[in-house]
Length: 265
Ligand SMILES: [Zn+2]
Ligand SMILES: [Zn+2]
Picture: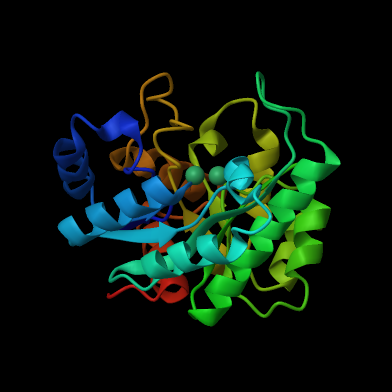
């Protein structure tokens, strides 16, 4: 059995064939799937799917891309109330995906100081929610590592750095703070030797598998829409890197996921 700890079944890509996608996941030994939110509507959708399918679980959160939701100075408490209403729903196992993202995407407004400030505010608000509700966090961090770590310092919170891609020093810092590391289909891409080196250095007991579907489709499915059934290719690559059996990767990453997200065994 595998657990896909980060899969966006709540996104439009699965609108037409969600039951088939979930069936293929089950057929390929994907026993559980965690669906993170990116905005309020996708958080709601994650909960809806989780309440419909026994093997699915939800995370509620607003991605740093959508930090403009916080732009009106007086709506922070409204937003907090809305998120709390979702977080307390059955089958919500984490707050996520939340974090900081300073990467300059094409055709997007420039990442200026104002944007960074807003992202931090939103991040802090959601960390508070995680602490108040005693939930782990699913962290999204892109080109914002130092700032993110500064915010997290002394927070006493558990969670995962999803789609981890830092350097060795950052890996050490993340582990020092007790966080898990999520790896995705991009570890199978030929050019990503640095990611495979990170997997090699990462302690097995901190490793989680994720697809980030519909994105980051692993080889040999690269080019197609990603889905949880393809998690096995990422698991195989981890087994090769760690020079161990696929069964062992399965067993350890599952027990890590069960522990962090307190999922029913
Ligand atoms: Zn992400
Ligand atoms: Zn994601």
